[in-house]
Length: 437
Ligand code: FES
Ligand SMILES: [Fe+2]
Image (tube, rainbow, N blue to C red; front, top):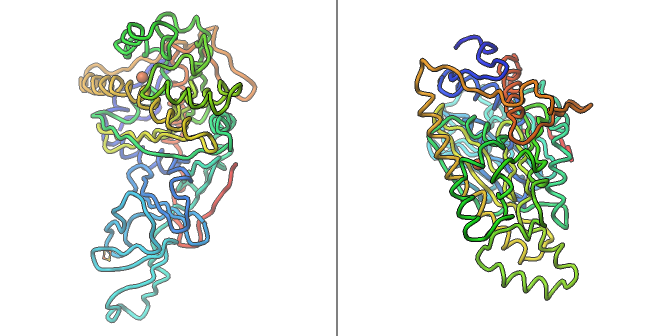
């Protein structure tokens, strides 16, 4: 692996970030071990003894809630000979029994039973053979994160200016809480950072989503969601933010000429639900309907959580050239059922209908990156541009088509990749928990 800092230059990035297996191995250790990584939403394990399977990079994790409601990040790795002990994606379990030789663990990670225990040495103590735990867990507004890095800042510090933007997203719900519902999964043949580049990219919709834009216009007229990218997106006032620590924000709201609801394309049942809401809420129905469409912002929490529209999407690396995306629709807790049904239908419109465009492009990028002799990827738009503003908290704001947010996350990437972070695991009962908000 070449010296890392030579791979990221002002305005360009070396192709090996996307193609080099050694870089990928280091990322899985240092970025997905050293940063706070999003694991799941609390609403996915609401009851005592619920659990959900997730990953910290390539490390399989079972996030559990014990009988007393406490959260634990158990590594899904038997302390005996390493088999995963949980094969289900989610469910309810007080115990996890390994299928290989029957060692059984509590949902706090303690080893509670070893079959045929005769024959182990006298020094064998079950307390030394629990599941390894993610040593630090933290929750911010229902979003659960974990890190292996003993020296990482608190989650609140790590999120920094992204925290209030998460608040804004969550506070669209009447009860100021989200409930994560069903999921869509997609796989693409490309590096995980192609999705990350794209999440802060307001330059591509005009072109990559052209067929969607044209169809949109033809069927529903102008001024619909995404029409703001049809021509000269920077003239609309839309902007991007580099929030620090790799977090990015794209705000499409200045590009809208009408309310979110009026901008929304037809979805199945739209008229029927709209009529029901207007019957039930009368003069307030415009405000109620406004909760249904997506948030019109893209908030990306490095390294693996993309908040877009009304969805939480996780970027789940599989190999240097393969990535899974999981898209979960977030229902607004406390909102009428009609609103949440519309949220589901609208999530099927965009981003869902747009994702295949992006995934096709990611695979084309990965194909292009295979040419070893053509080394650099350009990300210079907006570099040293007068329209880029930096605020007191270090947030850099730029017109939406600029590539500043990408340069920002690569700075965070380089910092994590160059750090000599102390990555650890914890024993059952010894992990720390931070309630950040
Ligand atoms: S590998 Fe789990 S009991 Fe042997
Ligand atoms: Fe896109």
